[in-house]
Amino acid sequence: MQHNKVLRTILFIILAIVVAAGLFAGGIVVGNQLPTGMVQSAFQGQTPTTQPTEVVTDVCTSYASASTPEELKTLFAPFWESWQLLHENFVDQPLDDVALMRGAIRGMLAATGDKHTSYMDPTEFKQANASMEGEYEGIGAWVDTTGDYLTIIAPMKGSPAEAAGLKANDVVIAVDGEDQTGVPGDLVLQKILGPAGEPVTLTIRRGDETLEFTIVRAKISVPVVDYQMLENDIAYIALTTFNDQATEQLREALDELMAQNPKGLILDLRNNGGGYLSTAIEVASEFIPKGVIMYEEYGDGTREVYNAKRGGRATEIPLVVLVNEGTASASEIVAGAIQDHGRGKLVGTQTYGKGSVQNWIPLSSEDSGVRITIARWLTPNGKQINNVGLTPDVVVEMSDNYVQVPSDTDIESIEWHDTQLEAAIQLLLEQ
Image (cartoon, rainbow, N blue to C red; front, side):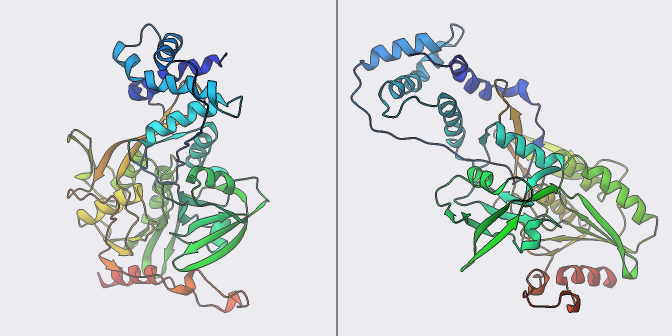
C-alpha cells in the first residue's frame, strides 16, 4: 500500500512542535476567539493478519528517519503500528491520510488538557489571523470555541451580530437548525462564517431561554477605536480589540482628545475579546507612567516582568475603565494593571477570566499552525485571574433596554441609557 510522501513526515511534524523554537513567526496572543477542537475516530475491524511485532518493525523502518533518536523510535512505535493497522483493516477505504495526520496532531495537543493549546488547519489558521488583521466575512462576534458549545464572548460594535441582539455568554446550540451537541467549536465556527450577504440561523441558549436569530453575514471590518468628547469635558475612548492597529489608533485618539484639556477620561474595554500581548503592554503604558504591567509565569516557576513604556499620553488625567463579561484576556491585562496601580477605577461587571498566553506557530509543511499555551499571566499585585476575572471597584449592571427593544417600538422615541457609562461619568464628576 502506498501512502502520500508528505505523511511520512508526520513524526517530524510532531517533533517540530515539541522543539518549535525556530518557528515563532506567529505573534504572542492572549485572545479567546481562536479556533480549537479535537478530532477522534473509532472503528471495529477484522483481526489483523500481520503479527504486531512484524508490523512495528516494518512501520518503524518505513517511517522513522535514521536520524531519529532510538528512544523516540520506540516511543512512537505504537503510533505507527496503529497507522498501519488502520490502513489494513478499516472498513471504509481509501482513508483520508491528511485528515488522519491532522487528527493525530489535534489529539496530541488536546492531551495536554489545556483548552487553549490546539491545532489549526489551514482554513482555521487563515481565519484566525484574518480577524487579527482587521477584515473577514461572517457575523462579527468574538467567540470562545473551547467549551462544550461555541460561546459568544461579545458581538463587535456595529456588526450584524450586535444588530441581531446577540449577547456575551450566549451559547450556540444549533446552526441552521442542525444540533451542535458534541461538535467541536472550531467546526461550529466554520458553519457560522461564510460569504457576505448569505443568512445563517443560530439557535441560542441564554440562561433558561432558547432563542433563534437569523443573521445576514457581512464583510466585517474589525473595529479598533471609537472616541469623542462627552458633556462636562469628559473624554471617552472605546477600544474593541488589541490587533496590530490598536496602539497607533489609540495614540491618535488621545492626541486629539487631550488637546481639548478634558477633566477626566473613560476607557471602554467592554466586549473587548483580547489580542496581542505586545499591544496590551503598549496600551497600558499610555495610562500608567511606570512600574509593572504584568508578570508572565512559566511552567518552571520563573517569571518575566513587563514594565510600562515611557511617554504615555494620559498618565495623570482622572481615569475610569468600563468592563463587563466580554472584557477578556489582553483587555484584562490593561484593566488589571490600572486597577492594581490605583491609576483608575473599574466600573461594570465581572470580566471574562482569561489568564494565559499563547504562541501561534505556523507549521513548516503546510499552511496550518498550532497555538500553544506558553505561560500564565499575573497582575502587578500577583493576582491570577484565569477562570475568575477581575472584580470591578464599582459593580453596575447594564440596563435591559440597552440591547433589547420590542420590534414594534419607535426607536426614535426611546431614551437610551447606558447605565455603566452613566456611572463612570458620575464617578469622574465626583472626583
